[in-house]
Length: 264
Image 1 (cartoon, one colour):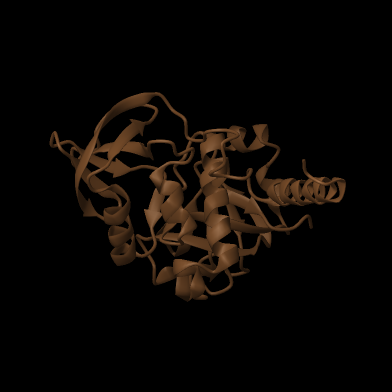
Image 2: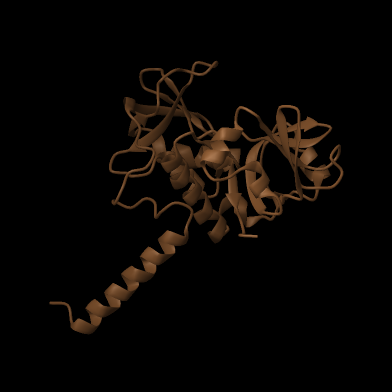
C-alpha cells in the first residue's frame, strides 16, 4: 500500500502536470487520454523506403506524403523518418485519400499503439513546423502543441534563433519569398482596400510586412472571435507562405495560422 504522504505527493504532482498541460497550446499530447488527428482510416501498409523528408513508399508502391507539416531540417528529418518507419506497419488517416498532383497520397501516418501521428514526432524533435493548412482544429492544436514542446526545449531547428522571423525586419522575410515561414510582431494598423484587408506590421505599406485577408475569409475569423480590427495593436505569431506584393505578404486562409501572444 502506498503511504499517505506518497499519495499526497502523487496528487500534487498530477495537479502540476495537468496545469502545465492546460497552459500549452491544445493539450498534453502523446498520452493515452485521446487520439488526435484521428481521421477516417484511408489505408495501411508496410513502409518500404523513405523518399524524402516528408514522404515514403509502401511495399505496394503507393507513395505517401505526410500531411500537416512543413519540413524545417530536411536532412535530419529524412534520417529520423527512416529510423521511425522503414520496415514497420502504418495506418493512414485523413479527410480523404485523393492524391496530390505528384500522385502522392496525403495522410497522417500512425504506428501501432501511438496516439499521435508520425508528424508529431518530427515536430517534437524540432525537425518540422506545423502547417498552416490543417483544417481540423483539434488536429491543428495537437500538432501545434508538439511544435511548442520542441520550441520550449530548443530542440532541432529551434536551437537556433532564426526560425521565427521578426515582422519589423521585412528584408529578412523578403529573402524567403516562396518559402513557408513563421513571423512574430505587433499589428500596427488594419486597413481595407477593395476586397482585401491588410494587417500592417510597419508604417510603410509598400515595403513593410503585412498579412492579407480576402473578404470571403473574414466571416471565419469573425466566427472565431477574431475580427481583423480586433487584431490591431496585438502581438501575434503567424505562419504561412511568403509572397512578394510590393512588400512581403502572408495570406490568411485559416484562423489557425494566427497565435495571440499577448492580451494587449
